[in-house]
Figure 1: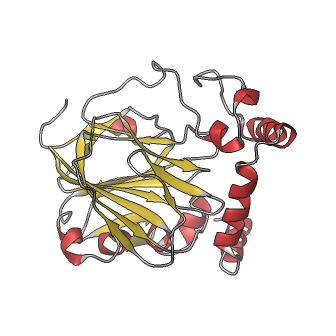
Figure 2: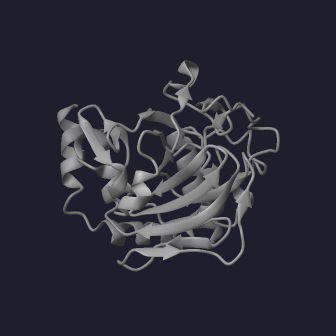
Length: 282
């Protein structure tokens, strides 16, 4: 790590994470044409955003920056592969087995599944011996999150926390990053056994949404567990949530996953096959 990356990580500790993120969210929701068009134009140029695959390729057609940022893609833009799918566009930063209930954050850093999932010992034990995968969404990526397999929602857990940046520099330096940031834990029952989809908040992430409950974060500073009156089943490849500004998705599987070597690269796309579990490939 360079000196500048270390300094960037250290400087985040005293910052008012939530205040900065909510302020950013205010500007991102502004519908003034001059403001939102200027923001989108600068953002597209700065991060080299490819609008050719967007369902609406004209940035000025979006009512707000948030609408642009969470834009839909053309129906054929992300064909679905076999087995376990990538839930989002981004970088597959880490994947592997849950060793003694620990996930790898970065070289030299691990954190516990129990802490990640909100401190529930019984829930964490369901994933002992399983696997995990972490996908980091950069600012230029498509920011809707989809199902890696078909699943029925069991419960949703909101876990309060800080909002450190989740880029590689911070992941390398800040211990337990994904288990100390604000996050939304969605537990699904699937043909692979339990699946935890953890949507991790980050610096200037104004909100996290799900398709079944709308905008969820920000909530109060207390953990909240939510169950729903009727079954919510989402098909493989279906949208399950979205980030209003970028972040990270951590998936925990109860069964061991054989990750494809071809998927373990710096870049993946939503719908790309990441691997298989228990011989299942459909």
